[in-house]
Length: 352
Ligand code: KG4
Ligand code: ZN
Image 1: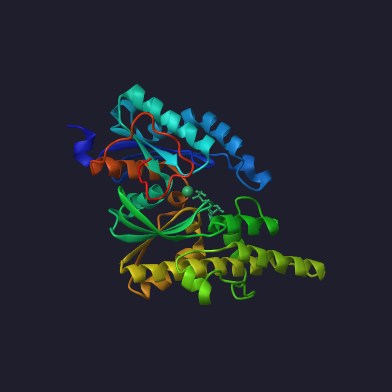
Image 2: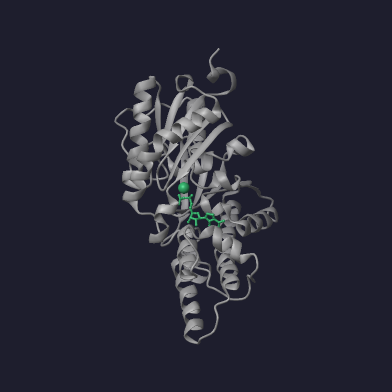
């Protein structure tokens, strides 16, 4: 009997949209391996991901990461039912490395290839931890490149955007504020840690698009660049006055402003859509304050919250494999071998 008919399809997923080379292997909704090689250290001194550096690092890491994933899963490549790969959105050169590797595997193994959407994968990964996705549900994706509220009717076929950031992404704001506070890249985890010993009400930073006409016009959109500028001005004023910058208080107050807006709008959207489940994904979903506040606010409205464990929130190959397995299980057609890497693939296109 084939593995696919017993416990779901055996799928390998490849993720190379940014600075993580991820290879994951799942059988149906069971995670077998999640191998990630990151080039983050090579970008640290630039304060952001350098596309050419990321592409080269993917090339170097691809084969060893594939081999490690198969070894951890105890799987031989010929046993796979399908190969899935992030075909967009993301950095063009970085995506190309993953897409080329997936096509090579597909041809070599004679198995179908599924080019999938990175954002849909961030949603699908939760199945590996919490079981079948409740559909419809509301997904909030918060990462270095995206901050979106999505209505998910079918993670393999129907995802509709309700709103997104009109300037910086939430993770980008964390990274930029961390930089001006002298914390390393990527800044999110460092701010999260620094905030634990600070006061979230020490400084009243602005909440973008949260009141008056801004809120009316952008009910489900986000804006974080005004907040980032407000933090910069506040820090500059302290430095000009020769006073020390209370790093923990700035971190905690900034983090509170981001998490306040994200959770308020997510819960508002879930209530407006009358969905009972809110799923949070993307790197910023690893934030400890975001997880607590989302849980509190959603629960008070009778909404359940699902957040994958931090390692599955940041970019990885398992999320791509998870979506690939769901596509196979629901009988969706595979991609053709001229599958392109599409750096601006819209979230409505689950398959590339
Ligand atoms: O999803 P991801 O790994 O890559 C993108 O697709 O962007 O997200 C990376 C982002 C970075 O901006 C990083 O600072 C942020 O996620 N991040 C966090 C935390 N951990 C990672 N932001 C806030 N708190 C955290 N604990
Ligand atoms: Zn991501």
